[in-house]
Image 1 (cartoon, rainbow, N blue to C red):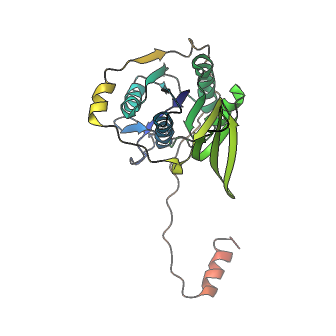
Image 2: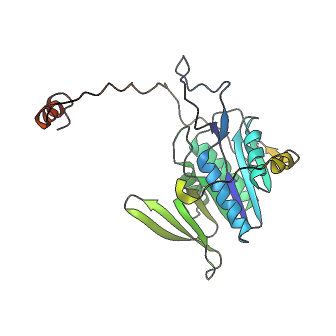
Image 3: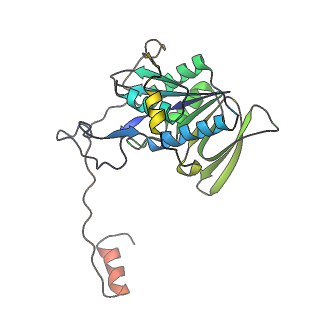
Length: 252
């Protein structure tokens, strides 16, 4: 069984985001970048499925500029077998990414496509659902537990987090699974594996080779920081609190 994992290069979660002076986006120059945390979880789950004997190959895919190769090297150091870099200088939005993943899934024929449920830069939470629709594959989103069925070969059970608690679904392979935070704890890449990953080949292809035309289906008009919160006040009584909530905050 082959598992394909999509990983994204984003601004590191510990970095304080700064908006560009022209408000066209966020500042990325000289900013630490890393693999999207949800993508790390997806990759870790794929590696665990391979180590459990359910998969024979873990393929990682990333899309974007030349620096995406650094993210793919990290994935290879964590234990992935193979890497593909879809090289493009264009801005990629969820629908375009889904079309590229559809083309890759059609050519690579993975049994499972694993993605993080969302990226921490845009928080779109759309790509997994879109690619499942394009491929017409069953999907298990927000997975908090993934288990291969021993009795029913060719299916996987996904425990997913919903508003009311947990929901368990059984999917026939091939399937798309998006991962939530509580699925696992990603491993660290060891120094020997980092050195080995430098020697591994990353296959580079273009969207044109996949037959996908990059189109700008979204337009960013302006990016701005949220307004600063006002300082809180201390009230002397419940009556004063209710008065402020009613006449100042207008929430009751």
